[in-house]
Length: 75
Image (tube, rainbow, N blue to C red):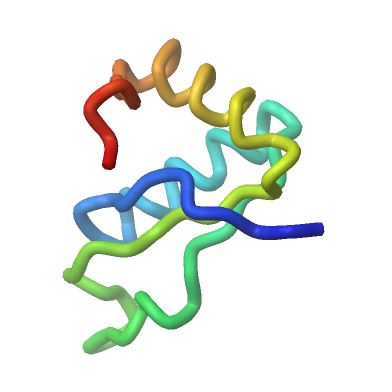
């Protein structure tokens, strides 16, 4: 399995919710551990969501259909 960056969430709470949404649709996802330095358990800083490289297109489709995220402007 090769993990690749899908998207950066504004904070850890949203990152965890998005990762759970993806997981509930069968896409393996995780919040990048290096991004979750926190105070009292939850990071207020942006966190990256990683998915298996093989699931990247499916993950992008899910984020677009479920959350309205448009990846055409992602760099």
